[in-house]
Length: 326
Image (cartoon, rainbow, N blue to C red):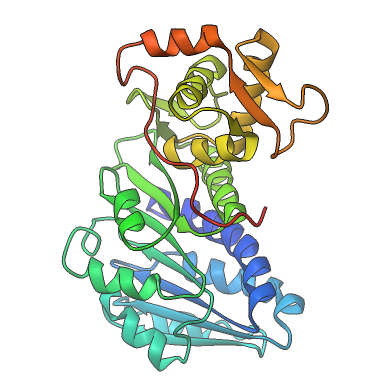
């Protein structure tokens, strides 16, 4: 068993997100890039990523998949050399050094500008909290399109920094083990609704399996296996509707993904509770609760939301601005 409780979490999270990302990336381009950057010892994510690409051999056949691995771990070359079953269409480029060498590494591997999924494992914040973050973010955001998966210390300026770097959709969950191990922020920056939703779902599923807790909006740690309080989330949705006016189900799902630790499925359940209670109405009134259904707050629910003290149940955060490929 790995000593770092997050190693297994990152392995599972990367394997799931890589599968989702690869589908969209290969649809857009015949060449794609995966960049793995380590600010400390490289855990099992190297093998997890290359194993996932091996399992996807049929999908990558005839394409060009470039894997850049940047880290200071002296065991990396031998570990990579042991991966002898990789598809011929996958090329791996190990680059010794800190993650701020990513711009040079991507250019040297001929991967600059390709659809890119970058992963940064920085448990102590050595990169994320210092000057090396700027060149790293520039390189990670240069993919067309670009996705960036982060594992950094809890409390780090993750989502805001991802927005500043040009990622239009950002989601994240502050997680902590059941013991006294330091908490971490698991975050994803992307331009894809599909990748955004898959990333948040993967954090919850993998984290629940590992026994992680998440930091809720009220600051209380809660188990990832526990059901989300539909009343609490419903109040947040009503507050958002009161602030912005009627929104589609797709827009409300995106708001929940980007402005709260919750999942899109939690948003749909909370909307169902609100509709059953008559707190909100829908247009059209009948049929499946699809993404284009428009949700309206009732006059009574608007008055109740407006009467609450500022900040009591609302989380700021825009829901729009990126393309939807769901």
